[in-house]
Amino acid sequence: EQRGAHQVEFLQAVREMFDTIEPAIAKNPQFIKWNILEQLIEPERIITFRVPWVADDGTIQVNKGFRVQFNSALGPYKGGLRFHPTVNESILKFLGFEQMFKNSLTGLPIGGGKGGADFDPKGKSDEEVMRFCQSFMTELQKYIGPLEDIPAGDIGVSGREIGYMYGQYKRLNGAQSGVLTGKPVSMNGSLARTEATGYGLVYYTEEMLKANGQSFKGQKVIVSGSGNVAIYAIEKVHEYGGTVIACSDSNGYIYDESGIDIDLLKQLKEVERKRLTDYAERKEDSSYYEGSVWDFDVDYSIALPCATQNEIDGEKASRMVKNGVYCVSEGANMPSNLDAIHVYLDNKIFYGPAKAANAGGVATSALEMAQNAQHGHWTFERVDQELQVIMKNIFKTVEETASEYDLAGNYLAGVNIASFLNVANAMIFQGIV
Ligand code: NDP
Image 1: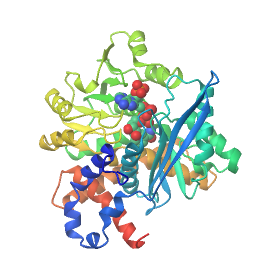
Image 2 (image 1 turned 30 degrees about the horizontal axis):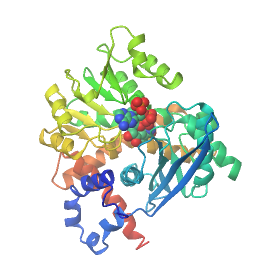
Image 3 (image 1 turned 135 degrees about the vertical axis):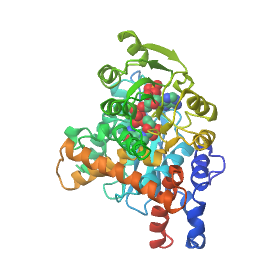
Image 4 (image 1 turned 90 degrees about the vertical axis):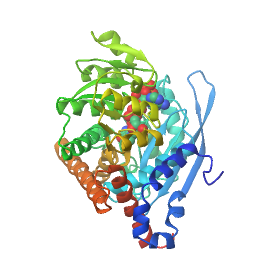
């Protein structure tokens, strides 16, 4: 139990990885000698703690907080915090496991971690969110620092939450802006961090499409989710000449044949904190449907899942293929289950696994750390330029690794083998630690 035998999401992430890295192990006998697989799947440390806070009605609420410090072979632990009622140890271990490999692909000196709480920010007042964040950070601050562990945002954690957590960290430890990333720009955050995961996803996907004689131009696209990653993926697809005809939230989805109105979407989600039902009410010729957007039968060619884990199963994946999808690229972490991945592979779908395709967020977080360390700010253009280079390089590494192992075109194998080699070799260099 303790070692994760019943942790469904964690086991799924491990299986997906281990199913594809056999050729790398066959070529490198030292991995067996070092028992590297067993070392890899055990997080260096998991911290669990109580988060008590006072609701507006005076009642005392208690949530469970976590930080999984998965692997520091390549640098300090780095990875987001998720506030969502479904958060548990299995989910955070799967996210931390993915994160260590993803971070290695950026080429930047960061290890992997993940954390969060089973707190639901939805429907809470600003004051409640602030009190929760302060209580969460009062405990978490004992275990993090700019050179040890640098959390960031994830589902349910954006600029507002990061701001409150940083404020509390500062009260307890003094100003050290490098302890959290994803900070608002006015608080030493990096320009382009908000956009980075969504933009990076589209940069990566465009590279993959180009390598296969295609592009976003003129293509119909569906994006799931309508949060941070989804919004900026939609914006960049439109810049690249594609049309995003639908996006979703956890209740349903909107269909807007002429293309999602990104200004309206941002106004509703980022400013007013409203739902997609409001989009359909305000935008003519758009419609709202309940259920999963991946069950929607319409002609489209590119799918960008940007909501959450396991949103696509084998059935939904087959449906996508029937609807004309030839490219699936993941903004969310592990949005496709193992059956869905088999459907992609069987149908020769151009597949961008999350570890590579959504690495732009953490890469830009590392650029935020660099700016904080030099007490400076880079322009939006500079950060965006670096992000583009990083995403292109990741695709190149993936493509080359797949070819090197005689698996040309199998981008899943390319991603998993390249990132496994990065982490495993760094661990071996350091001996048993
Ligand atoms: P947000 O909280 O901003 O948005 C999440 C979106 O996904 C919302 O539209 C939400 O709908 C939907 N969603 C969440 N949970 C579920 C669920 N159980 N079923 C259906 N829909 C759901 O989060 P982000 O955009 O930051 O994160 C989205 C994904 O991208 C996650 O997998 C995250 O780990 C990953 N990611 C994020 C990065 C970042 O920089 N933010 C970096 C790399 C990966 P609703 O509003 O109804 O809850």
